Length: 98
Image (tube, rainbow, N blue to C red):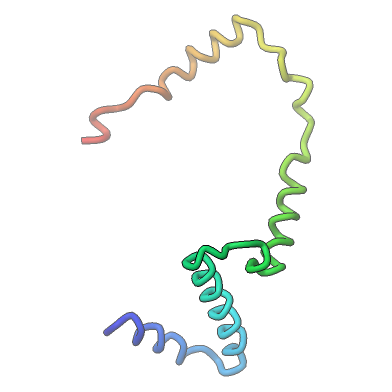
């Protein structure tokens, strides 16, 4: 069975009232693919919902400042202790990769 037939079989299982949503999704998907292929990837080609979501996530990226008071407070001893305790993370287990 070809991929196209598999897709058609899945589409046949979708209730009729949901086909409009599927069509819109497919249209947006193909428009995005064509935009990338044609090198016309610009904000005008991005759905407004995507831009709104990205903007919302960006505005929520750095809301926490509860640990700010710790910045710049490490001593040389703290750094040495941290580096010794995390040194194993830089080692590669050769047996694991065989």
